[in-house]
Image (cartoon, rainbow, N blue to C red):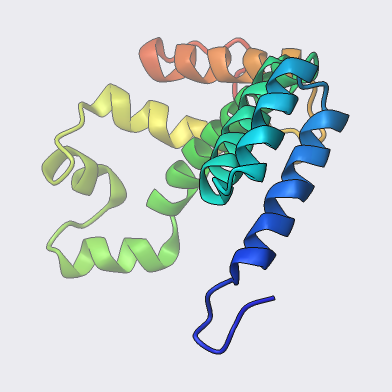
Length: 168
């Protein structure tokens, strides 16, 4: 389809636009709008039709019945990623290799590093250490209720040291 210079010929672009219109027809675009785009394509407005068809497909995808499920799945994945990142942070702060960095930086312990360099209170240092032992479900296996339960327990633990699940 692409020529020697890497660009599509006008005929190749027209074919792409026609394919996009066929796809829109399958996705339920109104016959009036479909006819308008076909007329515009016949008038030689290939680029315009191709761009508008892409935008319309995006809109149809966003208002489809499955779109809200997709958004919820993205939220659940973000929550899961957040709590794994929090626990990973906690574990990495207590890691032996990181501990060697504390020594090189002039601190004799993780605790003194957190107090001096990170300017955390002793209570927050302890809470951060507790988070590393917080029970985590297997990635991708937790139900939404478990994800949010864990997240709020972790927030509670970090806020006042009293997580619902404790350090399992």
